[in-house]
Image (cartoon, rainbow, N blue to C red; front, side, top):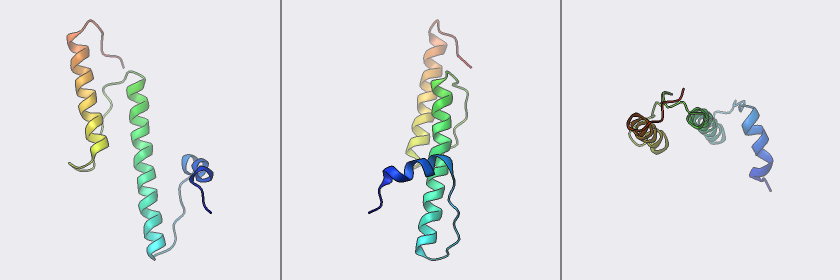
Amino acid sequence: MWRSKSATPVISINTLDIQGQDEIGQLARTFDAMVKYLREMAAVSEAIAGGNLTVEVQPRSPNDTLANAFTRMMKACAAWCATSAMPLLR
């Protein structure tokens, strides 16, 4: 039985080498795209955690819940910083 725990190091270090054109190949390409997206969003969250509220987030669509939430969160944090004594960190 395949366990996601064993796949974690592979996902965090490598990209998938996808050759197949069948349903499994299509599924693998979709999974690879999801991993790339999550890496991008992880980089954004690291920047925000480091105090950078100027990082740009590009939602993939109006339905991109995660990226749209990050955009709203950064705007709210920037507005709070602008109205408080705390300077905007970069």
